[in-house]
Length: 290
Image (cartoon, rainbow, N blue to C red; front, side, top):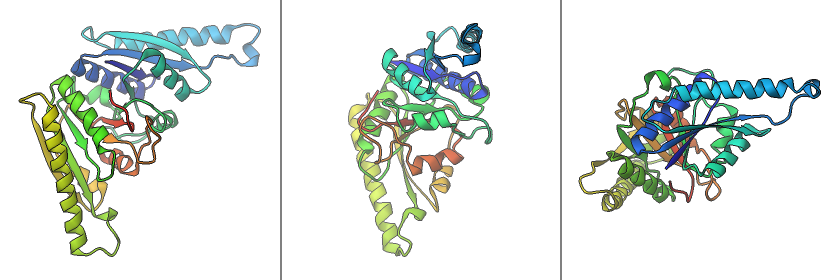
């Protein structure tokens, strides 16, 4: 398994490296760190070449600083990629390096422990062919050295099987306990709902969680801890906020049903979760597994 960190010399880049280290150590994976810089120099520097030289030197220094953040127990390699578009450059790196998970950090703004997505990360969340792991702000200072438990948020629409398959694979690879959570948001129900509507929605969530639990148990190594829970709330944010979270936890979610095959598309439910969650999130593309 190969993890790729999309790096910038920013606090968000450091958060991404820290999450990459955490995942690599847990999953016995190698770590690549790539930095994308533009291939062409401005016209003012065209005759001297100094701009390209300065940028190349800076990129080399930035990557050396990033590699220095990686402990000796994790195998790391650094790469400079040339592309006018940062997101496109990272997508090409995924293909060139054969990466199985992309790791990204947040942008400026927001609270420590929350997710704040920049334009490049947002582009990657709508185009990556592999799962994307999002580091919350400040993870380089507050993150755990290893993953403690995987939580998979099983939705009520088609596509949960791909998310479950991916969660089961990572759980088995890292010898990690797996928790399946089905969220029931009253705001997502019909505006003129009846008590029967809520009972039906909860019953459907219970049935879905039980089927996912039974399916996962057949594919996990014997003795692996696996639990499930139905979580209700007025909104998605309320529901996910009632879940107990600990250092080393991460949550996995599936792509929106609007996603193209083998591509990501961050859905509205996952976006709402990011507003309140202080743990890393892995978004899984449709029809793609690590």
